[in-house]
Length: 263
Image (cartoon, rainbow, N blue to C red; front, side, top):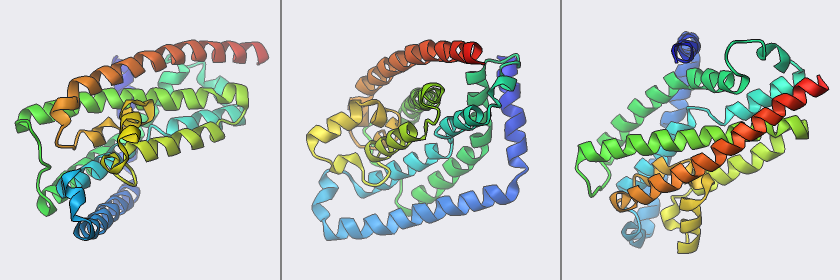
């Protein structure tokens, strides 16, 4: 455990030193927040009835949450795997005391942690000042605690999904096509472009219970009925984590075996 935290700390420390990059990332995030705000402000003015499906403040917070977790960058795990496989550098990482998959996960957490924290603070401040808090049926402390549970579970699932995308490169040679399809499905069913509350009912259910939508469950947690859906969301996330966790364990062992045999 100490090695893991130290690994993440070293990478995060190096990231903090890249101040110009962090500034431009926050400018990018701010532009997205303001663009979403003004775009959906006009959408709600033109179509006032959609407010019955999802209040305006909740829609803005929902889209903000998607791009907050976006900055953690777990999607980059597949790219790291792909580069190691195509370059042949993967063998040098196998000599380290931490397993190959864990190395890449820790590196990505370290690289994305500072940006994630800054984006979280920026989003909370801007959203609160401009649209106020989202409508919720829980007390604020309970709501925040529930969000933390959903956040950790959904990010574990996201990490497993992209690890599996990267591991597919051991057989396909290039895992980019798999990554492209998976990332687009997550964007669609995670509410990156349109909140799923606006989807047809059947598509809403698929988005919520599929691994693609569940991996961004934090965006759904901004909906007014979150308290009712919380137990179901937790069970759904836990089920997918178990499934993808088993797949990751089995496939990673076979991938390392394939590497040792083929050299």
